[in-house]
Amino acid sequence: MLTGVAEIENDSAPPREYRVAELAEAAGISVRTVRFYRERRLLPPPRKEGRIAWYGEEHLARLRLIAELLERGHALGGIAELIGAGEDGRDVAELIGLQAALVAPWSDETPVHLDWAELRAAFGDQLTDANTAESIAQGFITVEPDGITHISRRLMDATVALVDEGVPLAAVLDVSRRAREYADAMADIFVALIRDQLLGALTHVQDLTPAEAARLTEQIQRVRPLARTVNDAQFTLAMDRRVRAEYERLSGE
Image 1 (cartoon, one colour):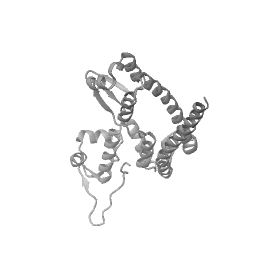
Image 2 (cartoon, helix red, strand yellow; image 1 turned 90 degrees about the horizontal axis):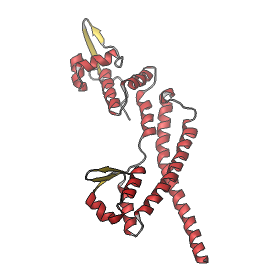
Image 3 (cartoon, helix red, strand yellow; image 1 turned 180 degrees about the vertical axis):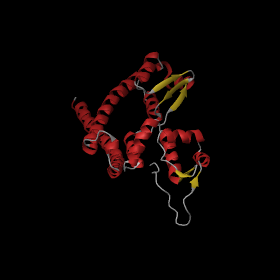
Image 4 (tube, one colour; image 1 turned 135 degrees about the vertical axis):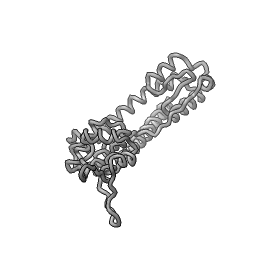
């Protein structure tokens, strides 16, 4: 969760104040950048004492918030909109926290790189242009001069293990393609569930109050593992039904 922009109160000492150069140094940016943010109204006005502008801890917190939002990939225009929402009485941290919960990755897959020698050892003469093209089309691998990078070590390990068991690589890729279609369909179902039952008529995150954003963020975080649990349980129960039916068919024959 991002740090909210708030005044830092200290009962034992007055709040720290900075001249513009001191503020820039504390934030790790240039004086020119501070002035640019002021011109774009991303920073509130400083306190003036004669010709000297004094900035407080709230200004430093705002600069750190801007830096964090930029690091997350937000453009300055979007940052200005979010900060404007905060200045209208809403908390930027809660709004961004909900956005992060909605778009955070669901997978925890780690990529794996295999060089051409490792691929030939794993797949032999099944390492064909057709199988490579199918893997690329499914979005699983990228081809590099010294080998390939697969987006999921687990899927790559499973593929190698199935081929070791005698399943042709082309058959594994065919099953992968069809399984991906069903996985996309399941994902659509849960996206619709979250959209319709949790988000309701929401069209913009900025329409929420801080309390609503915090509540939805907590709900999304609770629902995410539940969706994975339901998918896993449904798949294993379906396998029980299908394997039993197939066994009975073979026994009958």
